[in-house]
Amino acid sequence: MQSFTINGQTITFDAKKHHYYVDTQRIASIGEIVEKFMPRKPVRVDKERMQNAAQKGVDLRERIVAYEINAFNDYHVELQRYIALKRQHQFDVKATNILVALHDQGKIIAAGKMALLVESPYIKGTGIADIKRMQHLDLERLRLQLNLYKLAYEQTYKKRLTYIKCIHIRHHKKDYVDIPIDKSVAEKALAYYLASSQIDTALWMK
Image 1 (cartoon, rainbow, N blue to C red):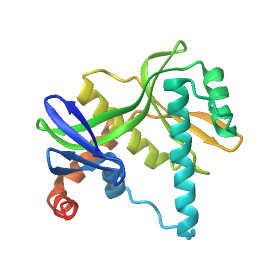
Image 2 (cartoon, rainbow, N blue to C red; image 1 turned 135 degrees about the horizontal axis):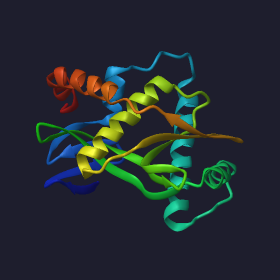
Image 3 (cartoon, helix red, strand yellow; image 1 turned 30 degrees about the vertical axis):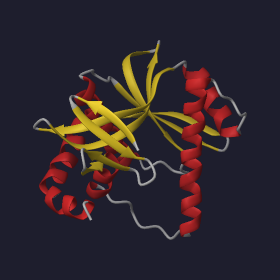
Image 4 (cartoon, rainbow, N blue to C red; image 1 turned 90 degrees about the horizontal axis):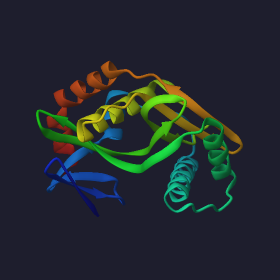
């Protein structure tokens, strides 16, 4: 369990279950709000294969964070793609695994961890960059997820973000993808979640 204090409220994160709590009250993750508002399309893929793919994504994110925090370089091919991408686009990582909280009327209703906070001499302001390893990006779903993170970051830290990026790495592929800023899609998802939160809360507390 990890605990963080944000705006006078304590958030606890259970990394094993990937659950967030305010005091003892279970709250949504931002990913859960995305799934509720925009469910994934069903695909016929072996469950074990999907779990292996998800774990590879987690491993890549951990490698990148270790590289940024401790300059740890294990010369993994996908980490090398990240280093090359960073050199190509000249972005600087200011923070990693940033805890953010979505608020409504002063209450924390959801939380999540952003991958990277970035700056570049070629882009004005500060941005967020998520790390994805899947074969094909679902750009509509990604736009929703990252705009929710942007809204949560600005609510939590009272600082404006001016752009959103996705770092897409898989094997030898590397792309630094622009994601449109769309506050309306984040607000629609948030309103939808709030309208159904009584049902969700009852399920989460089981």
